[in-house]
Length: 162
Image (cartoon, rainbow, N blue to C red; front, top):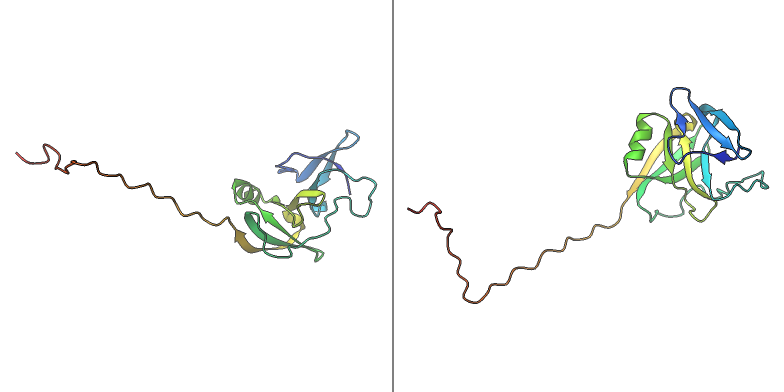
């Protein structure tokens, strides 16, 4: 476990396959992407907790998620399973095209972990469990125009009549 600061997106340095981490003492450390199971973006570092500083206790959803996104289940190479919601936007496609990994919102949004990056090298499997969207609203049709008294519907002038 290494605590430090990373950018919000684009953590993988494509050509080298490294993640450049600015640790809490201010040093820049290159960590090989293949050595990372996941990167947890946390509220605070909890450096006193050496067992689980990210406090990611629940790794699967108890029921269907309510938040909008792509509900996925990642199986790591060691058999551990993590579920999360991937965004339904260009970030999912960009990271997939670069073959670097995916960003997920973990099941327990009240935990210390706000977001997780899972490198492609750490995945043994990825299953899409569902697409969660907000219920579509029926479009409100514009009110019909009221006819004014005495209004006549006449053909356009010069509508082919000569």
